[in-house]
Every structure is written in structure tokens, then in C-alpha cells.
Length: 165
Image 1: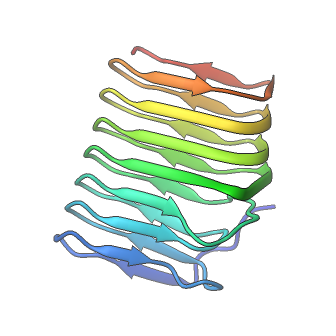
Image 2 (image 1 turned 180 degrees about the vertical axis):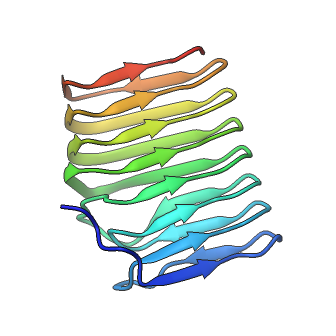
């Protein structure tokens, strides 16, 4: 199942913004430039971090399909999806750090299906835990020195790859 298209667009400025989606309304968050803080509250929310050191988190939802796309943009970005009660099932999503020394953390129960987690250019840290299985999923570092930690789960037609780093 594919998430519905966002019904709302939230656009930041060239300054450091704090942007959050509204619970119950799917949104596209386009942060533009600077060091932004973005909180996604719903399945189907999308985030484009833009330039700057962005902090992007999945907010208040507990059980999610994670049919989200998060692209942090250039800068030293942090993407975090972590909660003791967060669960994923047959999720299809994209988490991308792009250029910069990025940190991507995903801690959730369930399976990842047809998903991509990638650091992009520079020195990235990717940590994934509590996942039961990875099905048709790619976890990739990128250029330079990357650290990838997968602490659980079985692999089916999936790739864990440091790339050039």
C-alpha cells in the first residue's frame, strides 16, 4: 500500500526553522536552508531538509507503516525514528542523508519491505535495531568512512553495503 499524497505543504525559510506536521493531516515539509528541526507526526508525511544541519524525527505516532520519505539535504543531518512503542510492518520508505556527516537511527519493531536507508556523501553513521526482517531493502553508506550497525533481523533479497566508504 502506498501512502496518500500529502494534503498540506509546510515551507520553511532560509533561517533555522522549527517545523512540525499536524496530527491527522499528511504533509510535505520543505525546510529550505539553515539548521532546521522537523517533526513528522503521520504516516505519509514527507520531509526535505535542504541545506544546513537538520534534525528530523518521527513524532507522536506509535504504530506506523513508515511510508514516509525523508531526504535531509546537504549538511550534517540527524534523522531519528525511535520509540519503545514504535512498530513497523511491511513498511516501504526512504531515509536519505545526502551530503554531510549524517546520523540515521531507526529503532522499531517489525519488518522493512522495499525500503532504502542511505547516508550519501561524507562520513555517515547508520544504526538500525529491533527490526525482525529486511525484505527487498537496501542499507547503504556512501562515499568516505561510514559506520553501519544492524543489530537484529533476517535478510531476504536485501543489501547492506558500505559503498565506497
